[in-house]
Image 1 (tube, rainbow, N blue to C red):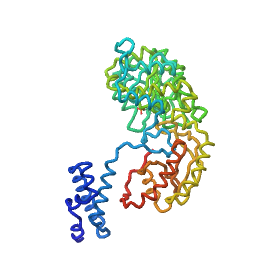
Image 2: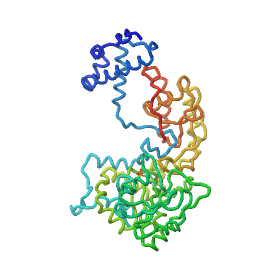
Image 3: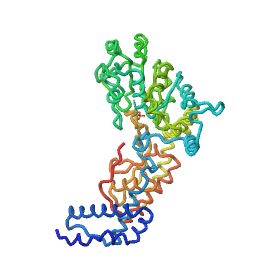
Image 4: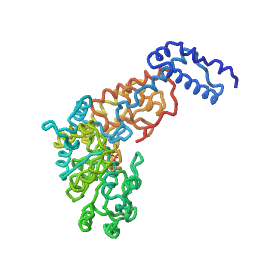
Length: 480
Ligand SMILES: *Cc1c(COP(=O)(O)O)cnc(C)c1O
């Protein structure tokens, strides 16, 4: 390959003289822009070498324009709001549960101010920072005591470290779960210092298996909700009630990791399998552990409710300090729990619950209204309202899809993956799913207030298509 093509690449100094980059130097910094220009040119030389001959080197002005766009894109804030049209309600990659308006207001009001985090305004004395949420958690779950840490994984480590270090915790082989984000129960247990004592087999574990494993070294019985999978067919597991009876007999605490933490009965929305925290306490579990940002619909946190004599050692353990939550989490959690005191208000105002409880008729209506508007966009050749299946996601209920309505789009000029990528990087950004040669926009996870934005996002695609921005094929794909 001739070196002439490389000679046609302008120098860094020449590029820096062009208006597009001059502006950026003033706004960002000379140092950063020079570094970015060099790295862009390196990539360009690399690409030329790889695609010898096919490529033209753009002239300096155009090249500078492209570099400026590239730098601007790299500079965008990392966390941007997106419209979730994937149909996965608790999408971990998209941040799980969005907060209720009142939770956001509560969070904002303490964010920029000092607040009564650990002082009692009345007496001026120091108080416990969890006191404000403990009252609501015990009321809603029917338990004696409660605490909050950074997430459910931390709650598990804390409970096991405080109650079972160096001793056995009995768990069924059918419940040794792995959830996304490298949470593997056996590893979490090892980190806590407790010894995992597996019983039963993958598909069948009886209460007799637990009983046989109980001995001098046993510290607790642990039941884990198999959030993201089901064992079907020839299978059996010990019920919580059976384990509670055994625990009482042997004076062993029974811990129940319910995962998604439903505080309301969601059976009428097709989620009969999700254990309710209150029911688990009623059945006699000594400690119940769950996440705050799954079905509770609050901020990321981990919740432990149960007997005061077992919560006490957790509060006093040094890890409690390491896993402690901040004022923002507590403010948002307190407001969310306040909404849960009234199931009707919770369904209307907690976003996760309002998405789950939206009627199919409502979704169909919106899909049929939006389809023609989307079909009229230049970037779209066909848009059809179509029934489909949404999912709870976030490590919960794998086999119980929620009925939904979607709009299935066929792009006019772009390939499907280009279309999906443009939607993701657009403004507003939209995440859909690619299925059967169409982009599916699932309305189960789109808030009604976002409907017009959704149309705007698709309308903009044809405009974005002409900016000459490079369109690498290796844009990251969404992962449910
Ligand atoms: C989701 C889940 C966890 C982990 O919760 P995080 O809050 O993400 O740490 C633990 N156990 C079960 C059963 C879960 O479903």
